[in-house]
Image 1 (cartoon, one colour):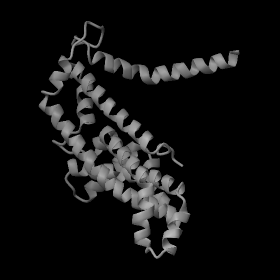
Image 2 (cartoon, rainbow, N blue to C red):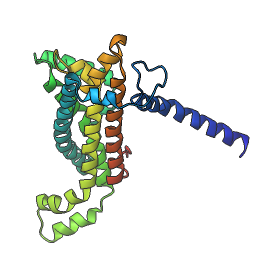
Image 3 (cartoon, rainbow, N blue to C red):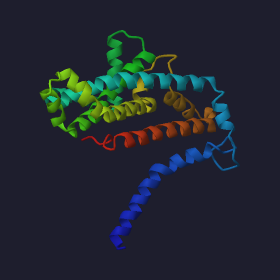
Image 4 (cartoon, helix red, strand yellow):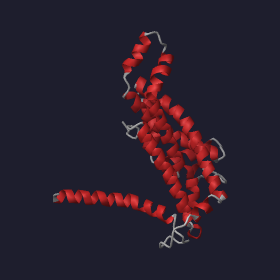
Length: 259
């Protein structure tokens, strides 16, 4: 191994350690029998027991899952239609409208949605959070579906049309089954992005509406409320997110690529 290769390997190991070592510490200390995240005392599961008896945290988790499921369904339907339209008609303006929420910074997206809801005189709450999540998840689903469509053999649809199938029937019988892995991958991605979102939820959440990322943040920013229970819920959320990402990579290997 030459000197350049050693530097490359060293840099790669350093970057991955910087990214994943904090996550490993969170998981490790979620099993630590101590109120302080300072030193390892012993193994325990009491923080997970406390977590499942914490009504505030459970309510926030249920809100997050409900928002995620609604976002998943609506964003998948609209994103699939948008992806199909971008693939079929090649309109210049449509990709800009669909993909802009992905390109702009999340903080700008959150502020603009907040201003929009205020202009509509809409009460901020779980509904506003859900609508916001749908708005920025549509583009991700559209990208995945369009990518799947670009890899589809268009001659199959043409053959179905030659045999007398209507455009709607050809789409239902040929196109839809072929792109279904991409649709499933997009749905799982939308759900994952929704349950993990903090920035947009922070701007569009009203008084009394809470999600899991917001609850975790409220406990982390106040030192007196910081306890290993936060590590426990972070570990579970991390496992759920990683599981969904693995499912996406298995269902549609190219789903995580922009093009």
